[in-house]
Each structure stands twice: as C-alpha cells, then as structure tokens.
Length: 353
Image 1 (tube, rainbow, N blue to C red):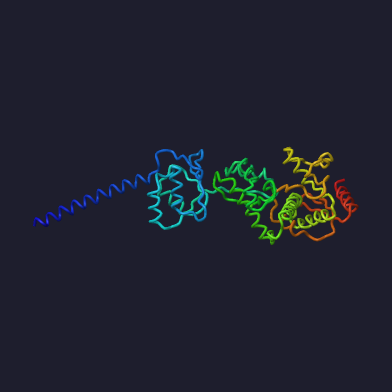
Image 2 (tube, helix red, strand yellow):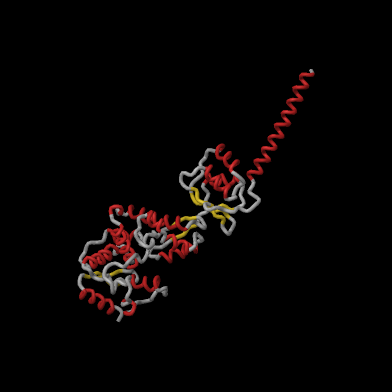
C-alpha cells in the first residue's frame, strides 16, 4: 500500500512537472511567436517602408532557414528558433516573390503568408507607343516605384548588360503590357520584368533575336518604335515598315513626323504639338529624320507586337512614300514616286474644298 502511495505521489509530481514544463514551453512559444515590441529596423535586403511594412524578396532556391535569418536580422521576428521549428515541422515550401508585409506580425502568420505566396498585387497597364519617361510616370502613379528610380534602373549598366542591350538606357525595350506588381516594388525588378517580356514577345512573333548582333537588334527596335508611332491600322504596319526600309536602303531621309514630335515632347519638354511647321521639321537635331539620313540615335517609344512584327518582317514593295487619306481610320496612301505622292495629297485636299 505504501508503495502504491509512493508511485501515485511520484506520478502526481511528474504530471505536475510535465504540466509546468508544457506551460513554460507554451509560454516561451507564445513569446517567440509574438511580434517584436520594438520597431523593425530593416537591413540591406529587407526594407522597412514609411507605411510601417516590411518589403523584401524571396529569391528562387532560397531556403526557409535563410529567410528566417534575414527576418531576424531586420527585427521583423524575435529570432530564428521558432522560425526554424516551424520550417522543420511544416515541410511546405515558402514561395518566391516580392512581399510587402504589414507590421507588426507574428511568426506563425508570417510563415503561412510566405507558404501561400500571398502578395498584394497592383495592376498597371503600359500602352503601346509610350516613352520611357511616360512609362516611369505611370508606374509611379500606380504606387509601384518612384519615377526617378525607374528611370535610373533603365540606365543601370547591370540591368542593360544582363539583357545584352548596348544602349544608354532601355528606351524601346520596355514592352507595353499589363503587369502585376506589389506596392513599392524594386525599380530594377520592374524594369527587368518589362525587358524580359519584350524578349519573350520577340520569340513569340518568330524573331530569333539571338542570331542578331547588338547593333542589328537595336536598329530593328528603333525602326519598330517609329512604326509604332506612325501606324493606326495594323494591316498597314508592315507596309509602313517596308517604306522606311526602302528609304534606308536608298539612303533617303525617313522624314518621320514622329521623330520630330519626340524632340519636342521628350527632349525639349514641350506639349505635344497639334501640327508640325517648317521650323519644327528643320530643327538641327540627331533625332530629326527630316534633316538627318538614316535612323535616329535611339528608339522614340515602346513598340508593341504589331510594330515589332512589322519592323522585323516588313512588307516587300517598291513604295517610298505614304500619306494619310483617312484620318479617322488612320489609313494611308502609298506611292512609288514623289509626283504620285504629291498628287495624292492634292486629291485629299480637294475633298475638303
């Protein structure tokens, strides 16, 4: 009987100790799981935004342990102990991407967010024919990144070298499309996404761009940017590209109004002109294709699929001129000789007399 009492007493003590230990462990886990009481300070890899959220990227192949270490260093979580336990207990992988996490946040909730890949995404649409500066303004208005950071990223040698772009900036390579980004997304990643989409679209339209040398590729992009600003009817785009290619082959001036408009709006910073005058077309500027033969020094806009396809696969013809004959539909009259070109203009003007 005494032995039984002793056993019961020992079991009671052990049970109480186990309950106490469990209580201590739960208390420790609750403490570790809770969001830090002090504000996160951030690090080079994890930014703390002015709105009090943590902005960071999880790269492809990065382990959960590595992410936990970075979060602890930035003060987003208490330490790595509970994070490592969670990572080992739950084998579900965290997902790559750029995250904007509202702080404070407990570790279990944060771990679940990263496992599910929940990213707050903002939609931004970049239309065909926009310039680099106009695109920068659009992404800033969408709260994705600052315009000045976007412009700087477009001229970043590291970004340009990654895509083998031999130019001063990424003008012409920012593919017009609808994109999804998180707020305050790193500008260099925004630019890389747009350039990456550009080369993806080239492949889709049948361009084996890797067989072209950098100069050949750049010249095609310049031509595509001019076609983008000149065509309205997509069926005419390859014909317009063919006209420009014919003029280049004959060393004729392109005489594209779009290049003059680029000088006025993007270089001189003036409003878009309602019409061009002789003083505009006679501006002594490298981008003015009325006074300089050949292509301008760089692209004048972001070409879409239609303009790119036209530039890389121009229509074969003997046309050297074109002029608008239906402004509403954007239709043009194409001619082989200057006399025919002038006659077409006279016939067009007679319609309004």
